[in-house]
Length: 311
Image (cartoon, rainbow, N blue to C red; front, side):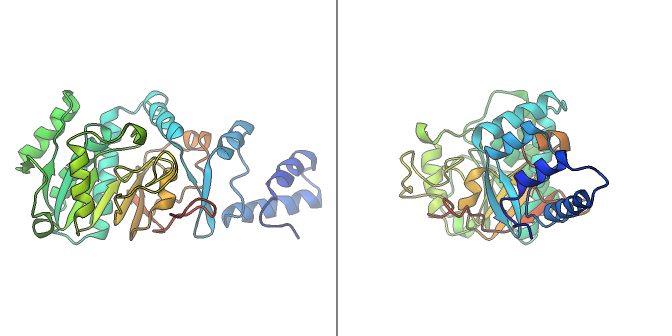
């Protein structure tokens, strides 16, 4: 009887050596089919480079099957490849990502909820702006805090679209946030964030205000202030004295390694635009399937690596 773990090497070797008509090959094929289906091993129908790439990633258990967690470099490389090989434009990806974020917020928080969307200076902030627009159309009441605005037409257009819907833009973090809003949408920093460089004004004080708020926080891809791979930890590995504890995490394209430290109530995967071949190149065959026409799929709220996934 084959062991559930440690059988990958045997399967790959036997698949090359055994003949198609042999009983052993039929046994191997049946085991491979069910092992992949039930998550005992990753997909075997990959090339050697894919096996190598997958081995570089931390894998974490999601309800009986392994889900890949992208490290920071691979997350950045995948984003570049999406815009070069399939030819997605940045505004296409931002629109699809922002729609996923809005769908996740709508899946967890009641219609009509008051949302404070906080947008950072990069693409994560753009995702927040797109999500804010969709949430308005979904029936939510949204206000936006966008203190650092890039001088690029893409972001200028996103602002104009929100203003055409009469969405208020705030000058500072509201002091009465717990009374005025029901949810904070955290779109400050994404997977390019360098935790060693620290957090510059005004986002340092904004992050402190978010930490002190008693209403739920929904973070886009990376909880702001977290290390993309180590989560709420300092460069030396010690836990941050103060860090964001979001109620929701919306992982885009694939969860990043810091997701194993997320302990909130709602974890969703969004960004339904990844071509299967490109996903396979980055070892993402184990991602769950999106149901029906949904833009999101719910993941278990706790994603921990046995060795490193706890504070």
